[in-house]
Image (cartoon, rainbow, N blue to C red; front, side, top):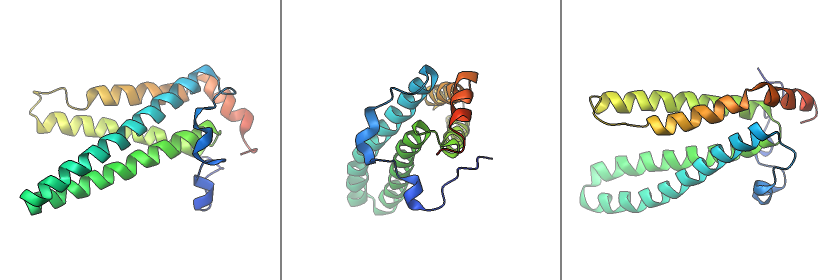
Length: 157
């Protein structure tokens, strides 16, 4: 387990705020690609969640019970997408706990792909493309060059 785990909420927030989101010069290539995959997918999730909010509000007006459930699911998806953006930024800063958390996100993506396929009786592609992209990002974070970069920062973050 990483020794640099967050101790309070301020440890989770990115250093310098969200303005440093686009600076990745010091990262190895593998981590640059993984960072952009996680960041872009998180931002797309936030965008999809905002669109989903409008749909949930319409559904809430038409079928209140179902609309409430959809609204709750959309809010959870928004929170998870926001967490993914923050985790990707913390991974970029060299925090191993964020790398572990993003690996768990990839595992959850696998679980959702399996559940989605079984719910559709195997007829649809489900969430497999999303899982594949998450898997690529997770593997890139654990390649030897990435491991060496995290090891070089151990104790400094």
